[in-house]
Amino acid sequence: MKEQLFYVKIVQMISILFLALLTIPAFGQETKVIEQVDENLYNYRAYNQDGSLQQKGMYFKTNDNKLLIHDYWKDSFGNKALYNKGKLVWYKPNGDKRYTYEYIRMEKLSRKVESLEALLASKNWP
Image: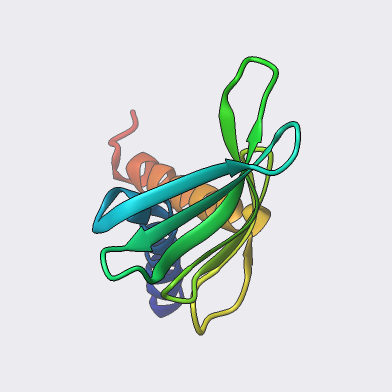
């Protein structure tokens, strides 16, 4: 039971930090800069009101003109992530180990299986 709670807390922490990394650009910044550096690559920088760098990363432009999060991303809190054309490769919260996309996916699936098992166990079958 303690091991399950540990894994639940890890998944929750990863989810919260991952969402924070993606949503930080929406809050507290005065300036966001996107510059084209290659035919399909764009540099992204977000600055705080005091001019300090809040977040940086790259975008990849698809054939249908969509910008996908791409390459190495980092924020001022020390969180780091690597993306490949919109798909998460790994995520590393500040001061923690690196979590791969596969690991995060397996943890989420494991929680779903446990939830379904508990649901099945609670049913009164004839």
